[in-house]
Length: 251
Ligand code: HEM
Image (cartoon, rainbow, N blue to C red; front, side):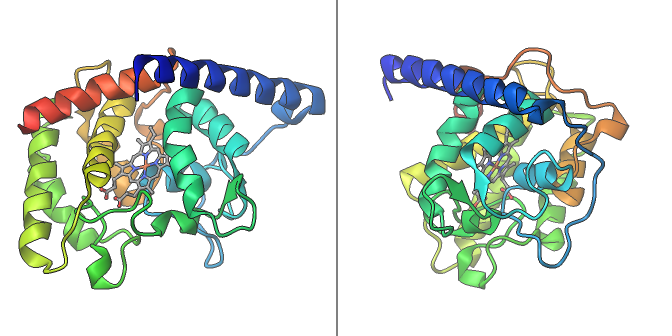
């Protein structure tokens, strides 16, 4: 994407975010007291391979049943929960909509996100590869291997790059069908960058290890452990700045 395209995305995201806010104000939706207490999903609720999306649904920032989730729901949910700016939510969500099975190109069931080759890829930190038959359920024994390497209070950029590299190497050696496209590799870097951005103090990593573990293991936002959403909106350029640092540290 060119700088101009990013500017266009930011402007589009800003306008869309503003329009959604206006509709929420007019309809009174924004003033509704929504319960954001964490609740485990019921057996019929849909969930995704993304720990953050699942956490947002478990807190009611996204529809708790995980069904017919709209682009507006994603933009509002991510903004309210972690102050992710619309441009950052859009860049992933527009891709995610390509996996939709809802019959509307503007909504997804969260389970649609497991469609291999849209965003879902091999070499995840906490999910098995599609080759195993389940590419979306949190796999505690797999995550334990990564988690055991996260043994400092905060996670440096170098450490997050290393654990990602280790996981990719392990997946590659154990899965005869292992395959990642250049897009898969890019998204995998973005995923590491995204937890660093949300749970770190700035753009230099150092995400709180306990918060990251809570996200993966409980699909919960670590409010009780002191997490507060960023005061400043976290935009796509912030995300890409951290992504570049993770990539550089992986070279
Ligand atoms: C700042 C916000 C977000 C954070 C912190 C986040 C975090 C993560 C992390 C850490 C993973 C990797 C899981 C693993 O390797 O086991 C992941 C995977 C994924 N995320 Fe997110 N995510 C965010 C936003 C989104 C959005 C907006 C979407 C789409 C609407 C999305 C869709 C996915 C999908 C489909 C995967 C599966 C990729 C795979 O591992 O195969 N994420 N996310």
